[in-house]
Amino acid sequence: MELGTRAVHVFNEPFGEGSWPLSVPLVQSSAFAFDSAAELADAMAGPDGRYVYGRRGNPTVRALEQTLAALEGGEGAIAFASGMGAISGVLLALLRPGDRVVAQSCLYGGTHAVLTDLAERYGIEVVRISGDDPAELEAAAVHPATRLLVLETIANPTGRVPDLPGLLAAARALGVTSLVDNSLASPVLCRPLELGADVVVHSTTKYLSGHSDVLGGAAVFADGALRRRVWPRTVELGSCADPFAAWLTLRGLPTLPLRMREHCANAAALAERLAARPEVTAVHHPWRPDHPTYATARKVLAGGGGLLSFELAGGREAGRAFIERVRLAKLALSLGGVETLVAHPASTSHRELDAGALRAAGIAPGLVRMSAGIEDVEDLWSDVEQALSRPEQGLSRPEPALPRPERALS
Ligand SMILES: *Cc1c(COP(=O)(O)O)cnc(C)c1O
Picture 1 (cartoon, protein in one colour):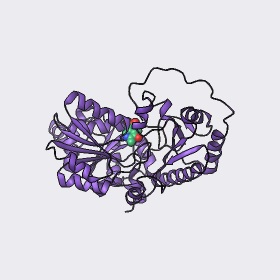
Picture 2 (cartoon, rainbow, N blue to C red):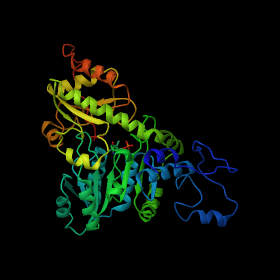
Picture 3 (cartoon, rainbow, N blue to C red):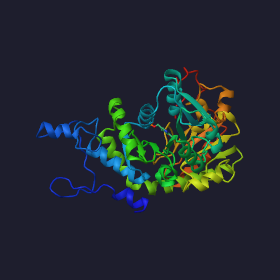
Picture 4 (cartoon, helix red, strand yellow):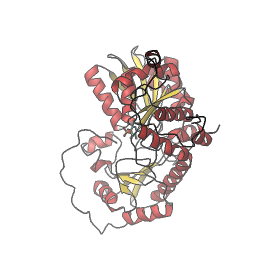
C-alpha cells in the first residue's frame, strides 16, 4: 500500500464481539486483569504478549506503534512520552561507558544536551561531523569502541540535509548502529530505514500529531530484535506514552500526507517571496537551489519540508521586532503544527550564546525561524509583509536582561 493509504488503514483489529471500530479505541486503563497466574506470568515475557501494566504496553499505544512502524517501513516501534523520551531512552539503552558516538554537529538542542551529559558523566566520547561526507564517519570510526551514528534528516534551523545514503551505508559496513531523527521530514518526505538506518526517532509532538495538542515521541526499528533489546530499558525508565496522547497522535496521522503537502508548499512559497525582499539577506530552505545541501536534499527528500529560516539585514533587533510584529503567525517554540509559528533564536532559545558562539552554531543574529502552517498562503504573506515593513513602529519594549536559560532547547 502507498503511504497515504497506510496512514489511514493500518489499524484493523476486531474489538469486542467481532465488530471493527473505525476509530482506534482509547483504552484508558493502567492495568489489565487475568483469569490465572499462569496466564499473567506468560504475558510478562516480552513487548508483544497480552497487556499487563500500562508502562509495559497498552492497546491504544500499540496501535500507534504499529502505525508508525508501517509508515516508516520498520519491524516495530516503541512510543514514548515525548521526543526527548525517545531519544534519551534509545541512547541510554544502546550506549555503555567508554563508547564513542559520532554525531552530526547541528543536532537538536535537547539531543546535543543529552550527548553532552553522557560525555561528562558516563565517559562516552562524542565526535562531531558535518554530515556532508561519509569519509568523516570512516575517519571517526577507526576507534574500535564506535557504537552509534546520530543524524537528523533536516537540521533545524539551517535546513541542512546530511548525505544519508552515503553515511548510512558506511555505518552499516563499519558495524556502527545508526539513529536518525526524522521529526522534521516525517515519513512522507523521507524514510531513513529504507536508506539503511537502524533506528528512526520522532518527536511526534511535531508533524506526526500535527495539531499542537499533544507531546509524544517514538522510536522505530528496522530490526525487531533491536526493538526487543531496547524495550526492557524503556520499561525501566518509565518514559512510556500515555494512551490519550497516543490516541491524539493516531487522530492526526491519517491527514499527515495532506498536511505535509501544504506545509511544504507554503514554506517554499514564503521562502521565495522572502528572498525577493530587500530587508532579507539570506533564506534557508532545503528546496532552494542556493542552499548548500540542495543536491543532497533533492536526492533524499520528497519535498522541502515546512521549516524555513531567514536573516534580516537589521540584525538582532530586526529579528526580535519581526517576531513581535506578526499577528497571524504566533511566537512559540515549537514546529510542525497546523498554525504558523515564528521564533528568533538569538533573543530566545539561544540567548545564552554570544555573537561568536552564535556564529559557530550557524545562527545569524537576525535569523528568524518559521514553521509554515497550513493557512492560506496569501494571508500568511500579508502578515509577513506587514511585519517586515513597519520599521517606523519600534519595538514594544527594550530587550530585558533576563536570566540565561540553562540550555539552548528547540
Ligand atoms: C522537538 C524536537 C525534539 C524533541 O521532542 P519533544 O517532543 O519536544 O521532546 C527532538 N528532535 C527534533 C528534531 C525536534 O524538533
